[in-house]
Image (cartoon, rainbow, N blue to C red; front, side, top):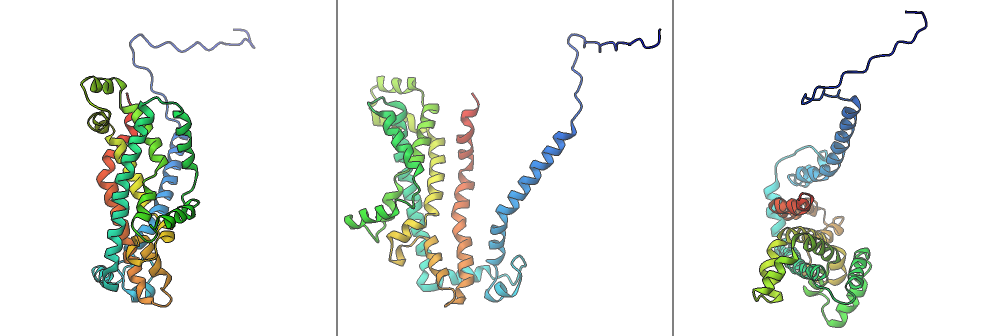
Length: 305
């Protein structure tokens, strides 16, 4: 062959029909990106769990160990003594605060979830003049922070004579624009119009159709909206602060805040505040652990046909 002549590289033979394709080499960049993602997730997990870990450790200490040892070092185990002192302090007012929080959260969340489901079902099922405009007004409510409307609600409750009562906290929690939005999305995805028409042809009224046909189909939506509403009600702080003056009506968060405000005058309350903060997290953890199967299925069921 003459010098300087270019030699063409023969093309790679095509795989035979039916033969398995050649495995592609694993790129190192995928491993590095996976390691980066895992590192970020680990940092987020540590950032999230560190306060709870501090709370778990320090709830087992008495006041001496609480100030005499580092935050993440265990002292003498005094958790049960702290719990006994917590429920005995001030005639057991902490137990009353827990019951109040359960009332505000469970009863309020159940009622709010049912109202949201009925409203979302109506928006998804019925056609009436101005439906989308009314729905747009509901969505505007999501953009309004609850703190902004706390003062107008206080003035309305004052006119109605509801200030410093359970109703002053329960009634505002019934309105949940985000729950209505989720309910409509679920109703459009889960409730076939053919099934509703079949129920009506069998003689079922509108309420019976909703209760017996649509509501069982919307059970994932019920659990999802209930968990969101329960968490928001349990952590609700500013509205009870505005509406309530009687400490016997306080939810647990506002009650612990009132104790925390007098810590410089009553330093013996430090261990009680820490232990009470730990116990106030337990109902939220129980609710999520017991309902997470239904909640996760509700969030992902629409992703697969």
